[in-house]
Length: 441
Image 1 (cartoon, helix red, strand yellow):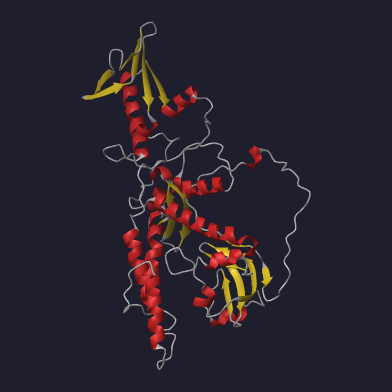
Image 2: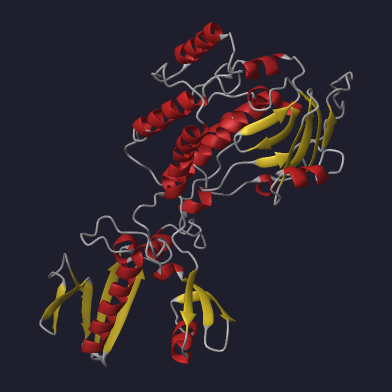
């Protein structure tokens, strides 16, 4: 009979003045063999299949990582085995292995969820390579009479991945069917107020520092439209989502830049990577070999700088990397997910009118349709509203010509004949703008 918690109590082993309890114990008198049985709960013992090594066990009073719990478990097992040698058999099973035997339909090769798989940036894409918007053409909508059934099976069409719940909700809304859930992480409490005060504060600063088109930055010193200026400033205040100070509504590029940086950079810190490349300057062979042959390091490279100095670069393996306590990937991934859905909302309205998109912006053909009027109603100065940058940034009304070679690489001519270009990898100063133009792209 196996001795366990409900039959005789857990077996106690006293090793080096320390008590070790085992889940099950049986002494085989015939073969004179001690049998030890251990059941390891995946969360409490740091299962390498179910949890990432750097994840912290929140229920552990010392807040150890899963890697530390796993190493502690293996060390404990070795201590027991060494004490009972030579006539001992250790039988261990992990919770996930037990569940696999109990529920064989569960995929044994399925990796535990990695929250960073759901963390990725916005969408930058060229939809139309060229469009001469000054040419007025008849647009017709034709439909193929022959409607062929898709030849792909459900298994071939299926998409497997990790997403935030708000993205899954949108997919279901658009007709996708959720076939199977492998794993999910649920938060019992949610809040929309954690960053509210922070965002409201810097949005207020940004709107005040944005000023209006009639302040002295845009008017001549002897401008007589002072009354109109005050009227427009009051309009901004009345339509803002924040309590702006009328005396502070004045263009201030420095303050506006700082407010914008504070708004944009906070969430990025929560998604920061933990494992950065480390650099060390080595002056001795002993120092070099200590790094190169260290089992904790990966992606090791060396560079001889001179006869006395070698630069070494390396990263710590994931299981040895300590997590940054100020990082919270969940905040970051939901931030980018909301941004993508906001962009999708715009694309879903405009459909084939879209020329180009980039994370939080969209270039499109305004054909005067109801869809374009709907987008126009989405413009404003509140958080989440759209801004017409052709008007506010370039003092023009519309785009005459657009050309693009791919993401982050486009040029457009405005109705004022002004050229606006973006070319990834190039800083568009006066010299470069002469060589990279709409005609030469």
